[in-house]
Image (cartoon, rainbow, N blue to C red):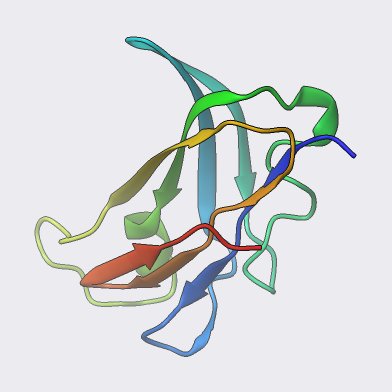
Amino acid sequence: MGGYLTTHVLDTASGRPAAGLAIDLYRIDGVDRRLLRSMVTNADGRTDGPILPEADFATGSYELVFHAGAYLDAIGVPPEAPRFLDEVPIRFGMSEAQHYHVPLLLSPFGYSTYRGS
């Protein structure tokens, strides 16, 4: 089996999956940053399919941008001006053709990530 990329977003403040959160995936080549796809999380806080499927997988550097501010606005979290977290970029590398899972644990004032399974 070849490589592919998935993600999962959990809203740690509400204790639920972050449904309806927009995510952009970029390929990074030196100073160039190319948008590969945009997706939105489903009711389980996941995208309906891999955010980078096996057919499009290539090793290299990537960036996921999670549109946290728009999500927080949509669920009614009172905004600050400006929001503490708006876009959450996570830049990472994929060095082997295998499954990479990059989850995001999100609250209005913090986030964390890790390489999941």
